[in-house]
Image (cartoon, rainbow, N blue to C red; front, side):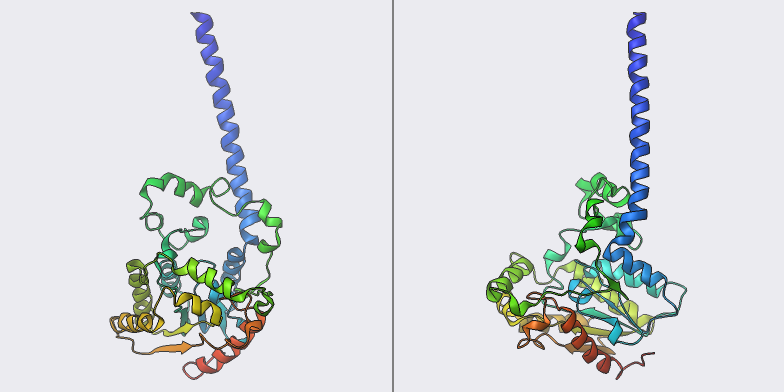
Length: 324
């Protein structure tokens, strides 16, 4: 009996020691993750540049990869590109809220993308990079649609080294070492050289629209709140249709009626608190239909397209606000 008790004691002692070292390893690894990996990601660099800003920005651009690769602040005085890959209006709302409700000086304007996929239900299927969004979005909001995976999502949020975060290996990949300037990440590919532009455009459109609702209720709600929040704070709002290829638009129109879509969008705007007053709509959707060399793929601008669009935009923005 005594030997059995001693055996159990030794077993539990070893298990406790092992558990201690596993926990220590995870704590150290997680700390290193936030110290080494996060600062090298595009969103990590963008946040750092925004936090280290000297003074205030006149206009801040929010949105997904269309904005991230499409706005080069070097050609728009007083601007910052605060977009991130896959970002939707739900996420943007909390980011805008934090900025506008902070004690610091507010921007004169914000700009949002209003593309054909902006309200699509495909946009809310995966709330990625939880470790990043926790600084903006309450945890309960991030997991509101995934209660059954709440524990897993908690791990992805607070212990990304073993959750769904960018891995240490990716730190050494070129995609994770992109240069970021005022939040902007340049793309170098040339869609004009793509082997089958029609097929590429159709595939991308299918990803955005197949089996999807055109207007997800949550995204409509958060978009409306962004508009109301900006106007309550005296901040101008620019809504931009970003350039895409004609191949992408042709593919999209197999799933969505663009004319009807934007008519419904106008209805959403009319229901905001100020009923759309003071909102600037800028349409560049077909701007580069005949210049595929300005795109990196069927629906993202490359560095040439971003420069051209940004120059166009600065002129339009300055008709409404001064840019310093």
